[in-house]
Length: 71
Image (cartoon, rainbow, N blue to C red; front, side, top):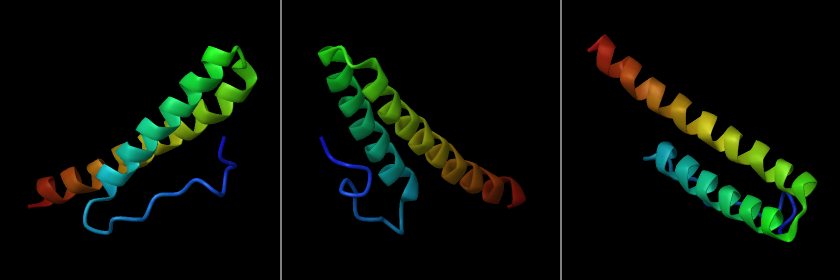
């Protein structure tokens, strides 16, 4: 499985929410692989990364909504 720094996606300046969602989906797949192997401890690392990506997606969407409300 990829190490923490070897797995990366190119940043999309126009749509950071989409990139955060792609990262969340990828980390979710890695988590499922570890869970299927019975390695709960290893899957927790990817669960944490998945939740960070989800938070980043929500934060990027929140800034979009904030701009809309300011309008």
